[in-house]
Amino acid sequence: MTDIQFPEVTYDQIEEQVRALAEKYPEYVYKPPIRDNVWQPIACSYLLRADTADDAVVPPELTDCGCIFGGAFKNLGFTPNQLLELDKTEARVDEETGNEYGDSEISTVLDRLEIPVSGDEQRWAAIVQSKQDQGFTWVEAVRNADEWKVAHIT
Image 1 (cartoon, one colour):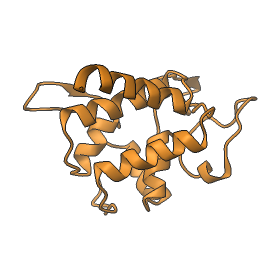
Image 2 (cartoon, one colour; image 1 turned 30 degrees about the horizontal axis):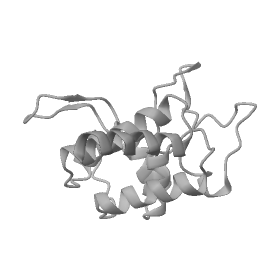
Image 3 (cartoon, one colour; image 1 turned 180 degrees about the vertical axis):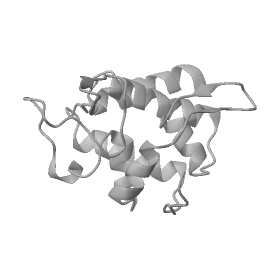
């Protein structure tokens, strides 16, 4: 990995931006990019998306970012080059829990950015990302994560 510098952001700022994007674009469905000539429904990208799909309507604010977290990072001052670098984040294993996180998963990216998060915050973000990658609208992805939060934290 390169020694690229990223803006300093907090988890609360990221979550706030994710919620704002879901509220602003409630019906938006992120389409992951096509890789190796195959559309991969569970292949999130912070910079790229498949806007070649016939039904792809990309809001102007989102033209140089990919998934909802890419949009959040962009709104927090990340450049397209920095978003592309986040896409290159390698898989890791959490030494404390033994959990495995895949390439460029939000949990891996938060760790790479050295953003302190609780397990519950990490889980909330992972649910949003997972639901988005499964084709849920952004508002549905956030709602699913919020429902998990209410059921498991309160």
